[in-house]
Length: 251
Image (tube, rainbow, N blue to C red; front, side, top):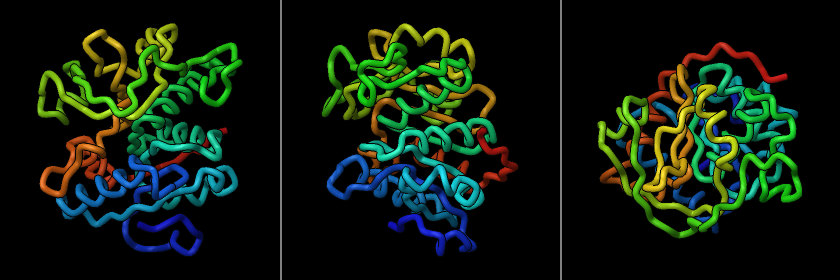
């Protein structure tokens, strides 16, 4: 594992940026490293990854977007949510492969609401519980430490990645999710809900027309092993390995 620094920007190997503030004691973040290692080793891809501290993003956005060919919006506590939203917007608008898991799913939804639906006041209950437009709010029942079945809609990119399986069992570590009040608007404007629990609550989203822009409320990296890397991580690594980027920066 390597952390973001200017000296690392000019290497010859392709790079994935893991967006988040790394804490080695946080299980899902260690699992992110493990899952990437599993998929990179399995695929033989000539690609490596680095963590990007969120506070570095705003001032160094141009250099970051020059360096990385895919982004993983990782779970965990964020020092700068605005930096994370900038990376998501950049990847969404420039067809750059991106995956977001757990908190990454939540920030994908938040960025889309703010910049695509033009809900400028869209916010996240964990960060701003008194906000008037809570696109992300506390789940009625926490999924922290839970395992659950997710039903996959077909046709979809995700369905193909799961080899057209009707459902999958995944691990969750979250207490927040998409507010049902905004689900239809987000879905019908192009960020499709393609995976849901037995009650129809959103668990996977993908952006129509994008090469790879996927968010999962669950944590696929927790299910990855060296013998069986997770299919979503495999697909993300493959897309990042072949990405060619022509960029337009947000703002």
